[in-house]
Length: 283
Image (tube, rainbow, N blue to C red; front, side, top):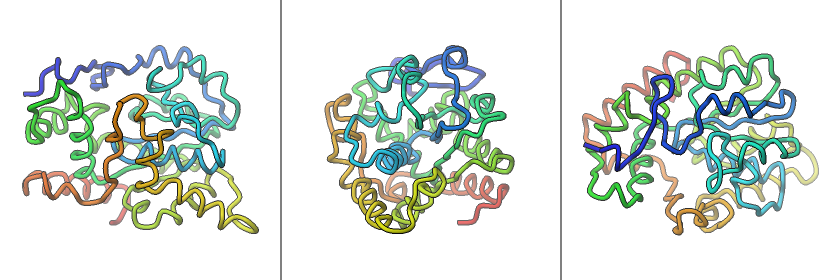
């Protein structure tokens, strides 16, 4: 069993969250959305969040090389992984904010707001493997196999960080039915045609990508957000915090086949199909 000491967590509204996450009560008190200019990037963990943050950074601030978390902070944590809420409040417009919150924790921030919301999602089988690989870098997790992690964390509704995949993704897909100012990004589509997806993001946030110079902008952003480039880019690979370059691993699709059992692959595949079919997403 994966013990609390190996993977500390706390519970808010019956949902487990990492121990370093700030309480939602503090966020609601100190963080105020700017309803006309803010852009929020939301996702389930290990679904392409850093990738999307980096694309937005290079679209909005070409040539920027500050640490990614300082340009696109995570509202739920503070240094050394993000800015403080006070620092976020001092950022100039447009602010781009990251969160892994389930939708019910941020809907009050979005009600009556024109703030843009980008939600990025990924095949839950690759999410499971990527999350295990990320957490297994912790010294406390030595000896924890993928099978232990799958049983005790990923598919355990009282331990899965930010809830189960299907609840998190389903919640945002349901929100998309009501919210016009929202863009859905699929990790696998970004792998398939990054330039196309960069263009979709640019159009959504109002960055001009037609006319003279537009092709060069997309090409420049594409170059700097290729996985091979990002892995070596110290402004976004979090090597300043983790002291290695393994935060970003390989960015490939389908590596879950090497680790998940047939039963696990079938379980998560069925869950994905049920969620996608419910909300009219076809793969």
